[in-house]
Image (tube, rainbow, N blue to C red; front, side, top):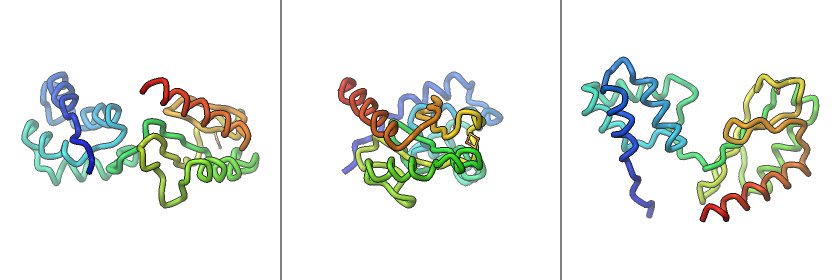
Length: 162
Ligand code: FES
């Protein structure tokens, strides 16, 4: 059973937006910032509060690549596999991350919703290759060994937060 989602942040975001239909993209962005994805429960709320059909909001959410309808982990790790990072061995880094976390190309998020591992085509920091980001913070010149150290640090942070 999944715990019931606290949707109060959605109403706060709507209040701030003035409930304007034109603000739908920034409303969706802010909701995703809070939950790390767009929970399906928010669609009927947005539809009612903004006077838009759920289908229309859903089509906007699926049109933009940055929106995710799948739950994501507290830490979203993006491994760059653009050309510069690829030639500097980004794949062993990705493989190490996945094996440490029990993830794969298909299974991107851990069951405890702590980690999501994705690939991106270029993070715009090619001079620092190979690069990954953790919640948009850049980690330069990574290696499989450095990934293990990084993961241990993130796990410690999670424990401290409990
Ligand atoms: S190719 Fe990795 S940052 Fe550009």
